[in-house]
Image 1 (cartoon, helix red, strand yellow):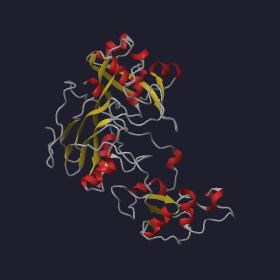
Image 2 (cartoon, rainbow, N blue to C red):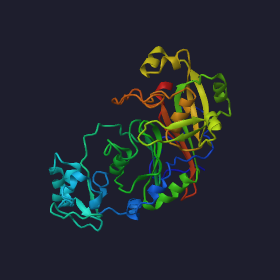
Image 3 (cartoon, rainbow, N blue to C red):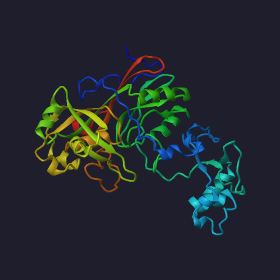
Image 4 (cartoon, rainbow, N blue to C red):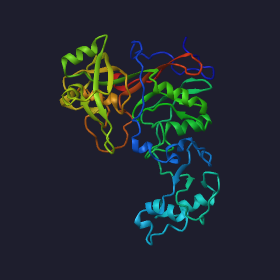
Length: 396
């Protein structure tokens, strides 16, 4: 029977009104790209740095960062004018990161917030130590306030499931450190051990799982790695222009979309080969998604304009509420697969084209929702069925 939440009531234990279809039973994993041989060959102190216990406690849900001081021969020429290392660690940090505001670093030293692995407190006068690892808190830039509503869908002593809103990143990265689901939850739940078991892209809303203890991390991570999880997503996008593809997506079996997806460094879009292109080039597809259309509807002219849907794609074409069941977990897989069908998801700023940077449009989020998550609890053995309580605005 489905697992019951003994700590809090579920925010959503049943499917919402968008669809009455049953969740897909195929397993899925959301694994990231495997590290390259070069990455695996790094020294152990760098490869396994996440296993280290930081000598500084979290501050407002944020972990300290670690930095291995470069060897003298690795330092940029502008930091070694006489082919010698900087006199102090503070000199290096200021020259490297804060040349215009050295007081930021001095303040960290003055409060004892720069330390070695063993907890030794460093000062502004501490000499530069090539190859040594130091820990400190970065200076946080002003971040725009992002949505913080994260209802609890399920909780026990091992795991916490929440319903993530659109626009909120899962973990600290890039411009968002404090304004992330992980940071906010650590503060709200008063649990510095929280760690996400999988991730959702910033624009994507829905079910997101966190381990509550160090001991719970590995069993749940292995569950995802071994594809012992079933997921379904909801999306709103135009009906495929190809009548045969649209008919198959409307069938009970759904449309099987295969392609080869590769994430290219420093490129926002993934590189994708269709199944036909794979056959021509002798490349094996590495992704699979079952695409089903739950219902179709005719968008208003106002909706087409508001969602900035391309006229050549959407004029005289109906829109659809899709059920998507990914059987693999490549970067942007669902967004890329619907784009491959000529049906880019509404609100997508990356597909079919990368749009210029612009402020978020809260009224028009990416119409992609991590709708359900199903698994056998790897610790208790209970069946857990989770459903997002959110809906997609374009399908309302």
